[in-house]
Amino acid sequence: MPGEKLKKIRTIVADDHALVREGIVKILSLEPDILVVGEAEDGEQAVDLAVKMDVDIILMDINMPKINGIEATRIIKGKKPEVNIIALTIHEQEDYLFEMIRSGVSGYVLKDVRPDELIKTIRRVVEGQAFIPPSLTPKVFQEFNRLSRNQEEPFNAFNLTVREIEVLQHVAQGLSNRDIAEKLFISEKTVKNHLTNIFQKMGVTDRTQALLLAIKHDIVKV
Image 1 (cartoon, helix red, strand yellow):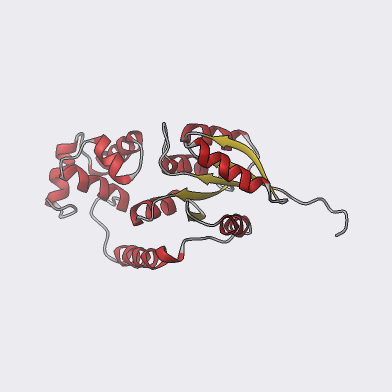
Image 2: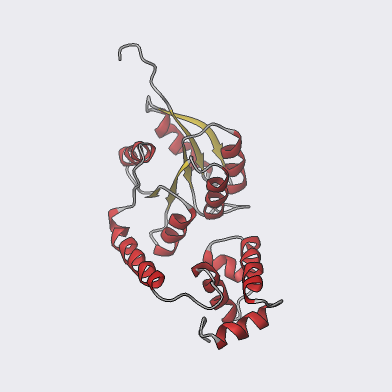
């Protein structure tokens, strides 16, 4: 309607590289319907801003100090599920893609994307759509089919989740909590939480006991 005030898409840009962050902010500032309300140089700042501010979209880099973008996304979606998050990254690796999808992102954009495509993606996501680069779409369907097959199979005796089994498998490979965290793109604290849940479900008190039971019940391979 004439005279109706344009609703702004309130946006936070989170990237530890100042030049990249400032470049994105400059691109977004040229759009009449997008308002940058905050900038973050690490995952911790991104979480803090997201919790404190009224925000529609967060452009989230993956590799950032203090808390990486994957963990920051999980925390934000846990506290404010209505916030839409778009992963903005140089990585076209499927591991990053799947972890960001699991953490709750609505879009996944490579940093070499054209400015007009980035703007278009932001508007799509705000309207409730999801966006993944066409080059990665086949991998998403492959992963979806794999997970669907796994869920159709009889579950393990201890009702462990897929993530908990992943953690146990890495324990079987002799990895430390820090190594497991890096492999799964989560924090060490999250790994410890998974192990605590595993111990409770299996009725054991340490990694060795859990591993022996898991091997006995053919949950993990060594």
